[in-house]
Image 1 (spheres, helix red, strand yellow):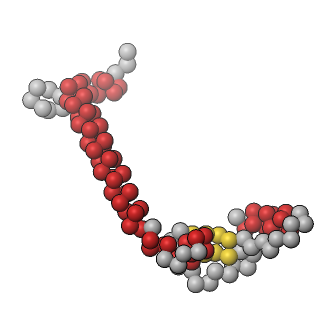
Image 2: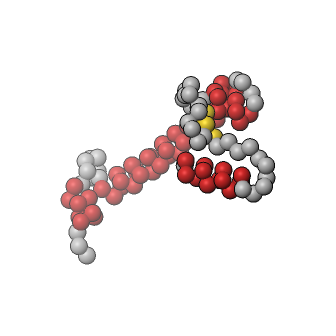
Image 3: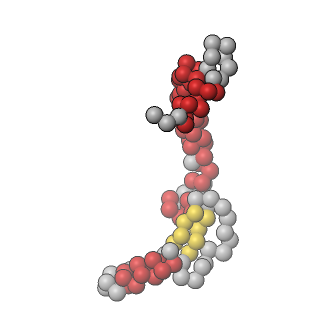
Length: 116
């Protein structure tokens, strides 16, 4: 990453763009109270979100909506996961269980390992 920063900075400085190039490594979370890393800056957590948005409280403002979206996705996932587990359980029971509910180990091992 540092090498890529140096290459990009050199390319931009030599293109007569007259840009003041500063490489920044952004991290969505955490705390680093010493952002100066020599060849680049490292902004973490609140400092990163404020740097990219200009909003001092963005790092907390985005948490609640993300939490709601995550819950919706988790609920959808859990429903789909349950359906698949039920389907696989039914197929397994039909194919590899005796009428008593016991696993028919011979049938299962033969399915998995018997040569044709």
